[in-house]
Amino acid sequence: MKKAILTSSAPEPIGPYNQAIQFENMIFVSGQIPLNPEDGNLIGSGIKDETRQVMENIKAVLKEGGFDMEDIVKTSIFLKSMENFGAVNKEYGTYFSSSIPPARETVEVSKLPLDVNVEISCIAIKK
Image 1 (cartoon, rainbow, N blue to C red):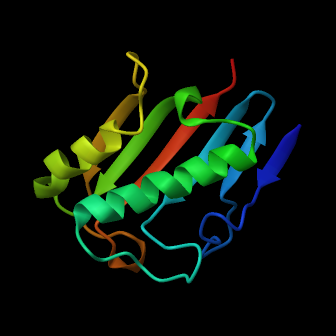
Image 2: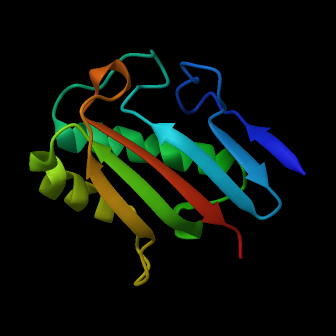
């Protein structure tokens, strides 16, 4: 059965979509951008802080669905500039303690919602 996931600990969707959809033992998390869920403002203090906010938003959505970061099997990272790859990669890596991090692609795109520098989506499966 398909179930929408919504938590106030992550930013509200800015369009006609859900923060995540859970289907059986899987959860599909929509692309998260560096919005602070408390005040709705963009984090703009640098790519490290922006990436951290994105990952915290993902973590909050997963938690609401009963999942955690170690359940992630696939991520997609969208960058406004590939020049930020190293900094994003370093911060992203701190969120996975397992010796088996998720599969992933990272792509540079011409524009992201609200003109942010990074957006990340993921798929997680509960063991």
